[in-house]
Image (tube, rainbow, N blue to C red; front, side, top):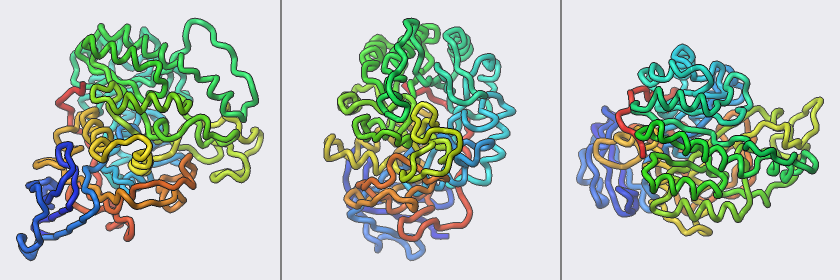
Length: 478
């Protein structure tokens, strides 16, 4: 083993700014031990040092994807720790946080959590943290789950799509807020709720995207968020979070609540920032997700909010929610289509909802740069710094800083590639991005001071080196 590892480039994102840098890494600890704001030559280091100058590519912190469904155990035909974390490493994601549902059992009790940990231990190619789940009747399990290592909790305010993870009522939420009011954790919500006023039934054929979009109108999101904000005073110091925000009509209420002192934030997803309802062809259920991909006009407003320095939308994540291709019931001729009996192909109302994208997000987002005018330091803030803060890992992940984990991405910000099967390392090669040309190529991914994947050479080792992040969190995000 080298006595030290040196990674240098004429461009690196250090503390929110782009400039030359040299990172000196202790390979034994996996930590960054020095950061220099210049490119130091190889001659300044011993012969035993491993030295790389990646100029003109950009050195970035490893991405922290705080919303990934890895589905193991129980639904490993959908995804698993092995394939999902390999896909993450391919795309520069060095930390993923696994959602509590779609695995069987879900992460709603300590016993269930231990079952998941046993499945995960030998299989993770990047570092993995875990969210716990909130369902009716499991309030007494929440504090023990915190002690066991979950980063926070997620509940659904509408049916989740899987029987073992039922949605919570306002009464359930009150109990959760009372239980966790003084805990160092965060509580998150899939914020869709059926309003008290009946909604008109969607009209039109089920294979039309517009029919599905009509079935999940924005009022479901605004109703849920209004409910959350009405209950937030029950636990004024407990951070709350809205996952995968899609509907911009909810933003004024969130901004007003934050201005009044509420500890609430939101995330959005790569697909809401890059795909629009107008682009989706009838029958192409690869694009189905909940909340839905909305109009281009809605997307423009979402970008406007994200770009604000005081935005209530603090993070961008994948919400990688895969399934087997048969559950998407795609029409013949659409990539990922397989024979399905007894169902009408292309039925948006019957297909599983979820967009597969773990490991593609950095390129999906960077491909929007020309239209939206943001910089690489903004991408780092949304996908590294703020996501690390959200999951309580901001003192070791998300930055290229002395003492932090040496999770490093070598990024070619001008390179391009077309999303094909070889660039989708997740288990089922069925994604809304398949066939799209993206800008921005992850050349190498380093995890705690060791190279784990290169675009040309693939994985360096035959065995994974990720760890499970189970230390009790010490900070609350705001």
